[in-house]
Image (tube, rainbow, N blue to C red; front, side, top):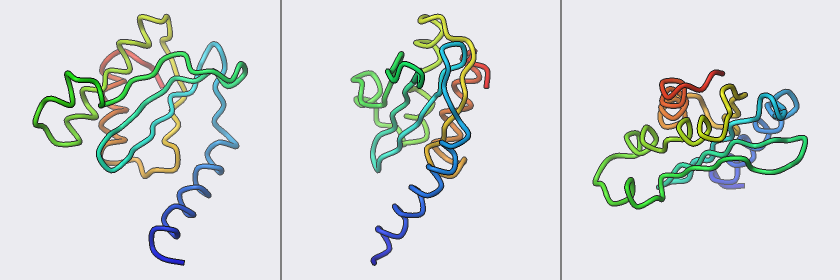
Length: 118
């Protein structure tokens, strides 16, 4: 087992441990974050119905055309504005097995500043 497999295995275990506790409801859906090497994605999910209500990513042209670092990209994703437009004020944060620092923390702080409560 190489280091990449170990990291992925560890993250999957942490993710399952979190998902046992964190559930999204229609009143308080789940804000799930996925981080790849180059991009960051956020979804607001209603787990009772099993569908995505709002999604946002750093792949939109306004963000991807700018020459900024990945932490600045995470700040500009703008999931809070889309959520408030959809009528969602509070969410449950799902860090998806990633450590709460860097891009994950920046995206969460930007969502809080945008008006989401969690």
